[in-house]
Image 1 (spheres, rainbow, N blue to C red):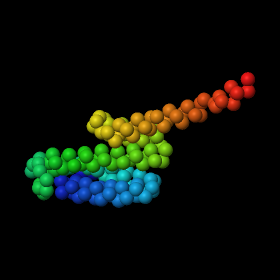
Image 2: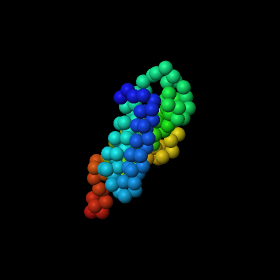
Image 3: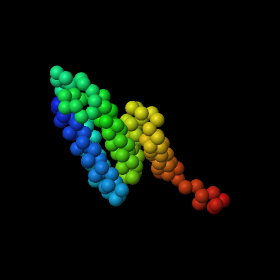
Length: 146
């Protein structure tokens, strides 16, 4: 969505509020609701395309004319935080492949993001254990009957 710098900052503030609300839902164990809110906030922030105006390349917080480097960093950090929280929601819902997808999106921008490193690794382990449990039959009963 093409918006002015002022509108872009408004969208970011609204997405931050939505993230805070989703955090509360996550703490209450309402993973599906939290996931939906994080997704909506992420979609809004990812959809921002700032219209370049006469003074739109001025940087700095709060100047009404431009969407500067500080604003861009805020938007990027918010996206990474939302993706990290989506990763956690997916893990809580045992949607480990989706958790890995979210985690890898964060790690492609920030390879040292500790929470996503741990969440992605944990999701890989969970998938391996699930696949192993369905592929390998139990052997304890067959070995004791000899």
